[in-house]
Image (cartoon, rainbow, N blue to C red; front, side, top):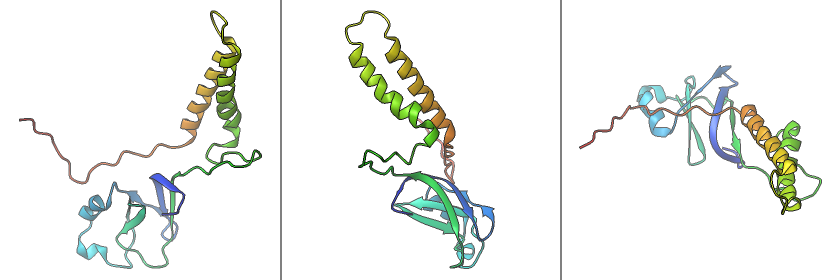
Length: 155
């Protein structure tokens, strides 16, 4: 996987074969589905799994196969004041970043005011709405199911 890979592969697509690929929870779960004859090189890729930062596929495809992967990447550090985070879409910058900072600053300004603090509450509500919009913007990966279902037996 690339160096900016952080966690959770949530989509894999074979560009060479023009088909979506199944994402398995780990290499062992993927290995259970394919016997030794199906693991030969040059076959059509069906499943992928990420383990220890490496992408595995089965059956093993040819050297010309291209797989497009979508994953959660590590955010880049913001060093200059002109930079903006690339992990948050541009249309959500104001409702997330600005409102979070405003909620902290309004809390300091409105310190000592008795009763409701309207500016602080408004900034917090806008921030929470921005976080909800961010969660809706990015898809959630499906929970990987084990290849062999296990049952708990209590003694």
